[in-house]
Image (cartoon, rainbow, N blue to C red):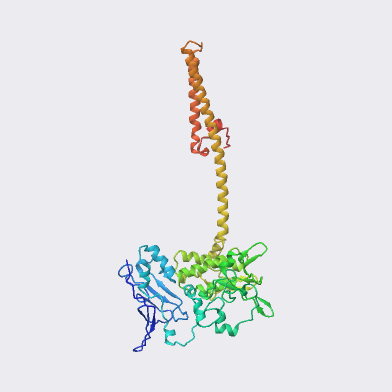
Length: 485
């Protein structure tokens, strides 16, 4: 199961258009036809063909966004029909990493490099390559964002302290509409920290993927009209107990706490924006990642709007995990009398109606059921886990007590029987040597007594099945355990 490796020159040539067709792009030895936004297709050059078996043709699709190089920032790779799970939407991969993980898991012996060399992951935009001087609005994927280097910034002579070519401070719109930022002599004094594109908690650059859902920027007005402007990865803030719902002295309720200026930012609106973005994303992996982040933000909130939104997000995630088609996971239940409008107790309506975050479909009964069944899963899981641990500890203690009681009583009975045998043998020996006047019938009585004690021992050994499976009369007679009916 191999793929034919293509040539590997790193040059990119734009060939002239002929006969009215768009220019062809030559990259890594492949001729790439620029395509229109949201265009889709199958096979070479943008997807594998006849892999892993003849007749297995993969599909591809692009979004609308392009990067600075003129290639689509959003491109998707789809499984061939034979590899799709029955009853499930066609599996899509929005990144090379997710596709690679699938190949390694499903086809462990496959040559990954040869697989990706058999087609072009990059897909040029027809609009960009047709008009080279047109300004392109960019929104980078996580892979492309990570590939930007300090040398790129230095080559164009722009001064982002973090070396980020796509820092918002370098964009024309940001230069004209920027609000004065509050002077900062703490983190911003660091040589490689940029307030516009670095996380205040981990100092790494933020990611603009899907509208920048993965970070939050503090827009609090501090003094004289200046804003804080510091940003943080939401995951960093959650791990630092500076986002979500946090008790104690900080007292957050679905909010973000800025470490720099101590201001609080409502995160319910941010999650609402994430939900709107999700509806335009076609990758199940990306949607799942965004939904799980939203759940972490809202979990434990006491706000009515946040709890209702959390219930809908959790139900959408359940549908996604069960293989529901993407177009249907947003058709969530609502109260028909209210229009399912979500209200933030402090900021008014968060969303609602068919044109807001989530579409309506079913009715009040299912909504009530969802609200009852979907609780704070993590809290409930931890509570049950703690409860079970306590039960098992108590069970172990009780079992240890039962074991010790059984051990002591069994050994005592064994030693008693052994002493009876010893005494019987001594009496028999004395009678045989005519040294004792013991009546032979007395010896028979002792033997009968030993038999009865051995019988008791046999009964006592029934505790091997556990005290709960042992007849109560045995526990009462031999272990002094009395159980009421």
